[in-house]
Amino acid sequence: MSAIITPQPPVLPAQLGRRVGLRDTLRQTATMAYRALLRLRRTPEQWADVLVMPFLFTFMFAYLFGGAIAGSVGDYLPALLPAIVVQGVVQASLVTGTQLREDMDTGVFDRFRSLPMARIAPLGGALLTDTIRYAAITGLTIFVGVIIGWRPGGGWGLLAAALLAIVTAWAVSWCWALLGVTARTAGTVQGIGMLVLMPLTFVSNAFVPVDTLPAWLQTVAAWNPLSHLITAFRELANEGVWGADAWWTLLGAAVIVALFAPLTVRAYMRKA
Image (cartoon, rainbow, N blue to C red; front, top):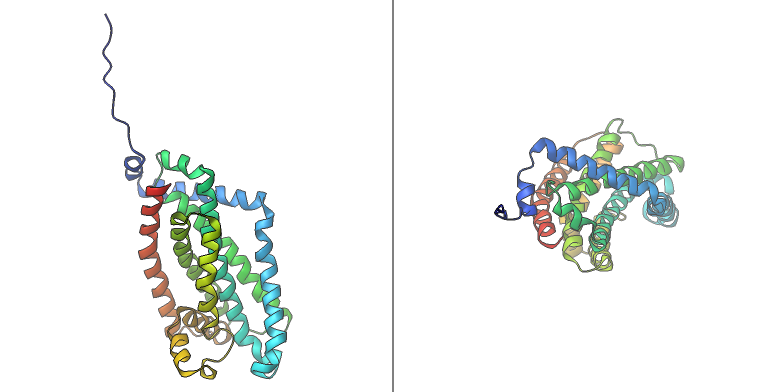
């Protein structure tokens, strides 16, 4: 007499992800963040841009353009350093997309997708770890600025400005994460990202006063989201003032996360 075994239908990864509660989601995201942190420690070459960029851009812009734009290097620093911080963290956020694409190409995310794990955990963990990169760029840039003569007068406003820049960069990284999931290669992510970031950075109030631009370009710079972040950083770091630009920056970051986080997770589950 033989037993009859009725085969059970396989449980799809998507079904497994839906059963994960909030507490487990947070725990799994923290585990994925720790994995990404170990990867950073084992591949120190990933820190090259973090260590070099603050020194390179700060010295280059300060000593090449300080006299021409503000009359002296010292007078240019209060406007320049916030711009260098914002440029650094926003460009560093692009690394999220390229590394995500590289991870998916190796097949490791296929394994994550097959586990009873929250859908957002691998993505959220990677993005959470990247905030360490943003914090390092912010801190090093401020340190270099102080060395060459910048004296921020905003007190605790400087800390608020740094946190605002880090939070905004984390929000922007969701855009690159979506691109990393949908693009075919990491090179594509890098190329498209630079095509977007270069004009977005320079067509703003980052390095020159907006009123020196042509009239039509002044309008573009005024509506540029990075102009709001740079202005907010300047007000907080130099004066300790939390103004309207800071609120607009937070609102923009929230909208980006609300739009791109679910799109990225959906694309990841479809393609991983």
